[in-house]
Every structure is written in C-alpha cells, then in structure tokens.
Length: 322
Figure 1 (cartoon, one colour):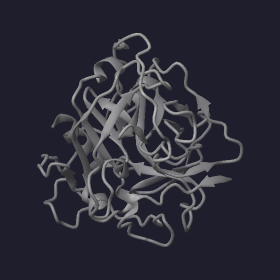
Figure 2 (figure 1 turned 90 degrees about the horizontal axis):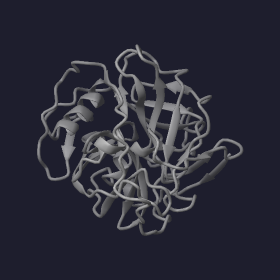
Figure 3 (figure 1 turned 45 degrees about the horizontal axis):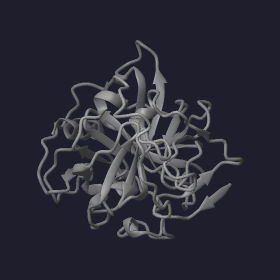
Figure 4 (figure 1 turned 90 degrees about the vertical axis):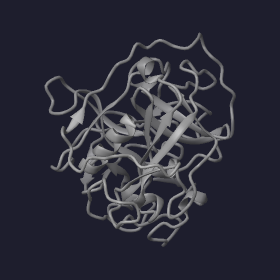
C-alpha cells in the first residue's frame, strides 16, 4: 500500500469525525432531497448563489442512459497552459503496484466526457459530463464543507490530454451540493455538480447514471480521472474492469480501483449492455471521493465514493434541468 496524505487543506474544515485529517465516514440514512434549507435532511440541495432548485421527492425513473456525442473538437491540438499539481485534492491510495492505464488519446468516448477541473489554473479535481452543460463531481471539489465557502476560480477541461485541450475549456455558471456536505461536512454526502457556461456535452457526450435499492456488491467498476502526481493534465484509468464493489452501503461504495489525489469527483462506472435496466452504455453508479487511510473498516481498507441513491439521482436530474 502506498499513500500520500494530501487532505490537510481548506476543504476539510468541519468534517464530522476529526480523528485525523480525514473523517471516519459516519453513514446517515438517505432522506428526501426537497427538504427546506436548514432542515436535518442531508440530501437537501443547495446552490452557490443561494437560489432554490425544485427537486421531486420521488424519482420517476431509475436511471438515464449515456450519450456518445458528436466527438467534434474545437480545434486541432488546442494548447492549454500548464499549472501546479500541488493543490490537487485527495489522497494517494494504490493497491500494490500502480497499474493505472494512461488514456491517450482522450478523444474517444467515454474518455472525452471525463473532465479535469482546475482552480486558478492549478490541478484541483476530476468530474464527468452527465448532460450538455453539467458536470458531476465530489462535494469537496465545489465547496469546502462543514460551513466553508464555495470555491472560486474553477475551470473545466473536457477530455484534456496533457497540454492539449481538444474540447477547450468552460467556465462556471453555478455550483451545487447538499447540506449534508456544505453544512455538516459528512463524507457520506460528499457530492455536487458544476453548471457550465457552454454546451460542450453535445460534442463530448455524457455518462448515464442510475440508482438501485439493492446492494451493488460485486458490480464491476472503472474509474477515470486526473491524478495530481502524474504529468499535469493527463487522464488515467484505475486499471482493469476486474475491479468490483467490495462493500456496498446505503450512501457509499468501497472498491480497490487505484486512485490518487486529483481523481476526486471521478465517475465510478461500468459499461452496461443494451437491455440493462434503467441505464445502458457507460453508466455511473457513484462519484469517487476518498482513499483508504481512514479509521475503521471498510474505510481503512478500500477507496470509496458517494453512491447514487434515489435522492441523489433526483438532485442530479434537477441540477441538470435548472
């Protein structure tokens, strides 16, 4: 096991369990997403400008399928300025040898729908397109958590490949998360979204996503992202499809896919065949958020992320439509 603790940063303020620099990950039961601000329901949706988004209390469907997009780039090998990787959020959590696979080129689907998120030009996080102008990511990539501030200076680079930005970059119109993260800093509610000022998703395509009440244990998992310790702007995948969900909880899922700092916000996804319930194509079941130097099983054994539940599916849908 190789770890590098890169979490002693601003976004950790107010974490519920402060045993070390990371929370122990107390799981709270999922609640309806359309509760009033200030209520005890941690999946209550909030926006960076304080506006309200109407969210249904029940999902009308269980998922939405992926869209390949046109693949049309904004130019030939569009160059992008480099920056520092020192600010990438997350921890290094590698299981044995580092078996991650470099994605090159990044213009195939779904790699082009995975985005690098920079802050003030420097490495920050990863996200994934799930609509024409919307990116899903970890809550700690958009808000410091536990009463902290919303991040500024964010830029989204779909399908970035080192110094090449084949789909250009997009700025932020709105940030979203939930009170379980922004107010309580509870890692079980560490998810959010970024509304963009562009509709690049029609070119890159987007991931599908789904929720199910049944356990996800044994489900195959892939994770693509932008690790901070690799060359700036390179996209890597956490090795092969042989990885599966090891532990499935109400609000989180645990797995042994290799991830490192900067991959927070990556999609936890699989390729689902035609005829699969609710979602076909490249479909996400969760959002990667943490490495495994936590206290208590399974947090101290597996990398883990925020599971898409019914309430979270509803929030993602509402944020996409807003």
